[in-house]
Image (cartoon, rainbow, N blue to C red; front, side, top):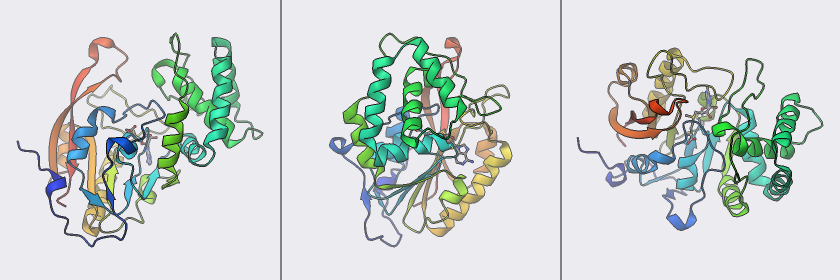
Length: 298
Ligand SMILES: C[S@@+](CC[C@H](N)C(=O)[O-])C[C@H]1O[C@@H](n2cnc3c(N)ncnc32)[C@H](O)[C@@H]1O
């Protein structure tokens, strides 16, 4: 099947005053967190299906923000249900030097004992901790915990053990500053995705990367927060995507390639792409899996 190159399709929308043209490699920042479901491996395929220019960039399930950093839009609206994640992005956007200083201190102290002390302190959620302290703790644990997982128990306590890294790269100042510059151009919301996209208008681009529909009834990729994303949630997302498309937004979604997802997006363009995943804890079950990219005509 021939892949429609959205970048070649002439936009039929009202031209917003300041449109983003996709970034060149010189201007590119990259993700500062390891995130389950990260889109690093699908950036080419996503880029081919994005409009060549657009008004505002929306990513309401932002996670590790791989596509946002690659695109480096002039104006963006980003959101996630995970408030700790959004706090990291806010602090990196506006207090990057303070975050870096705290990370340098964690790097100096890094050891098994230090990791579990930080995890303990994180889970106590003391009101005395500043947002920057929490952002640095989050980044430190993300880089040193097992597989960069974010997993919480039913009470919201972070319960991932320390990973077995010899010399984990806890932070890189140049990358943090590049991310900070990109994030300063974004509005950041800790909110449900449907709230985040309410302000989207004709000519804007919306990328939805929701928690994936499981390939099997036992697979579970939805442990980013203590809530899960059900089939009803997937159906509600279709309704939101339809209303954005009707409003004149360019909408792109990714999800797993299951009969259910194909059924609920009937009428949309659906392409299959193969993606290497390392999410499964069993090494034998890792490997390429089919995902779908779903988009409207723009
Ligand atoms: C598949 S991940 C996104 C991955 C991201 N695109 C990347 O490159 O790393 C899904 C994200 O959606 C967030 N999420 C889950 N349910 C949500 C909801 N109802 N509203 C907003 N965000 C939600 C999760 O916290 C998680 O960060």
